[in-house]
Length: 67
Image (tube, rainbow, N blue to C red):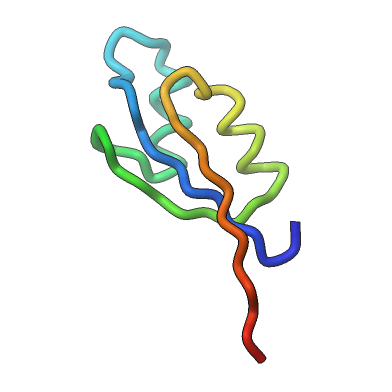
């Protein structure tokens, strides 16, 4: 998971879903439909995504560090 990022896009509206799912989306930074955020790949973020996987689309991004 070194240098890996995750691109998360809010595909479906959280309207009508439980408040927990809405709070997780806000914590991820997904406040509007079709918004895309890029986060570091970590178990914490993966757990949040698993809770709202029916609302989001996830894409892995491999970063190559140039030193």
